[in-house]
Image 1: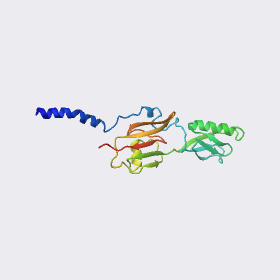
Image 2: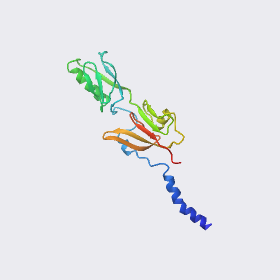
Image 3: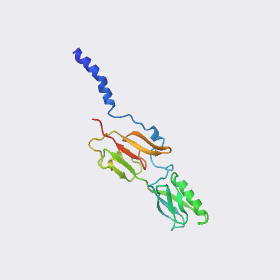
Image 4: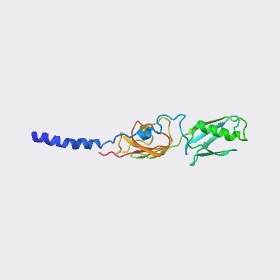
Length: 192
């Protein structure tokens, strides 16, 4: 009996250490610094976004414009406008200033995001790929959009990569973590 208890106590640290390998600790600090939660006035425009630009009283200028890979849109009269990295309000003021420079007297412009850039999901999901972003989504919602987990998927965490001010930022996140446009989610394979 004492021998069995001693063998159990000797094996216990190994079992506990192995159990800790099943799910890594969540690391979201760097991602949290880039902004989480719903998309609001602080959302930065980037390639892949589609903008609805409304110029009041100028129906021929009001349209939906796609942001290109360089963060620009091309509008009639004023040409290329650099909107990447700006909020919708900043983009509206920039378009107003360009229109006021000899094209439209006292322009009033509104810019709205018509469609956010897509998110990407890879790894142990049924259908990995690129999907349209839905406001308010979480990693779990993204997995559902990708037709659910694969048979070997780790179901309690994922690795999320996001564009931050200084470049790409990634972290290990829980399934309830908010997803933003342009994020890449990798669902890892479980160990056991």
